[in-house]
Length: 65
Image (tube, rainbow, N blue to C red; front, top):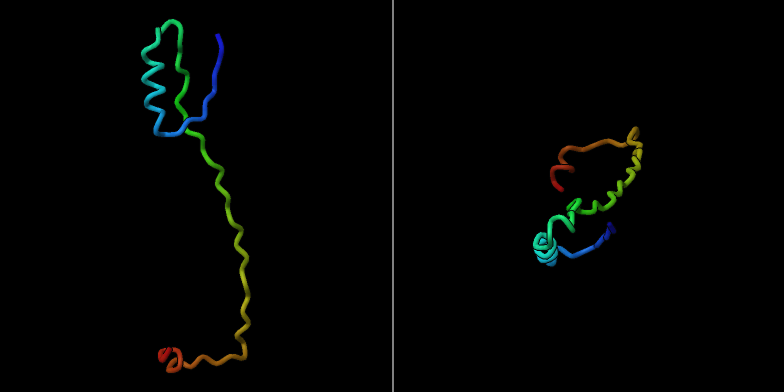
C-alpha cells in the first residue's frame, strides 16, 4: 500500500471523493477527510498608563464635544 497526501481546493474536493468512492473498496481506503487548520496568531496587547493626577475634568466641556 502507498499513501498519498493532497492539498486541494474546496471546489474539486467533491470530485476527488466521488472518484475515490467509485474505486474498488478492497484496493483503496480513504483514511481521513481533514481540513488544515491555519495557525492563529495572537496579538499581544500593551497597556498604556495615562497620568491624570493634575488634570481637572470639566463635565460641561466633555459633554460639548
